Image (tube, rainbow, N blue to C red; front, side, top):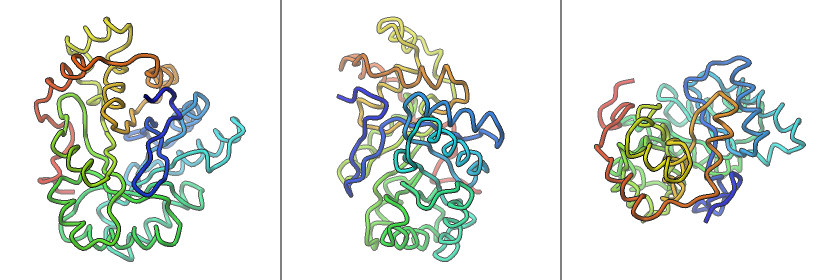
Amino acid sequence: MKRNVQDTTVLSNGVKMPGLGLGVFKVEEGPVLVEAVKAAIRHGYRSIDTAAVYGNEAGVGQGIAEGIKEAGLKRSDIFVTSKVWNDDLGYDSTIAAFETTLEKLGVDDLDLYLIHWPVEGKYKDAWRALETLYKQGRVKAIGVSNFQISHLENLMSDAEIKPMVNQVELHPRLTQKELRAFCRSQGIQIEAWSPLMQGEILAHKDLKELAAKYNKTPAQIIIRWNLQNEVVVIPKSTKEHRIISNADVYDFTLSKEDMDTIDELNQHHRVGPDPDHFDF
């Protein structure tokens, strides 16, 4: 049972990844972003997730640098994730994009680097680049984002190294059970983006009832549901009180019946693009 925001899951290569982190999707560069990252570190978070396309890697890097200094930590104490964008997929272009990401973040290496979307005809060359970076020790773990089973099977058909993580949209309206089972069988850690469905799910009566039962918030119920499903979760927030609240999920356990109640909310509903039908 995970009991602390710094508790980790062990990836297939032995790397320890925090089960709960801070996401920064749609958070613009500037003091709000920097303070959010610092607040997360101050309150025990050890994982920060960003991406090249978010346009905020410099601010994330500043927040990490200032946060670890204030907390008396080292760079190695923070698990930093970024992602290569679609326009940069390809062997040489992915290597170059990685260098740009390191420069913007102000770090010498990454803990996790992901292919952001499965762009047909491009992600295999990008994966070879990630394998190279991994073998060189410049990134501790490599993975993908938004990959469905068909994409994973195609990628792994001639890959040297299996993805260690698959970060996908996952929340009570999109439980991804089939994908989760496949990834589990392959030793691939599932990570949830948009775990709170961008706030759309928080007013659901079943979640509000569970929140009242456990004396928690609907957001805390969903985060706990993810953790008990062995899903890494990265809720986004820029407000310190919510960053604190999102991590206050280690003093209770959802019953199997209540886990099933949340599972039954599934409608295969996405708030983001369908990985099989996207054009960007």
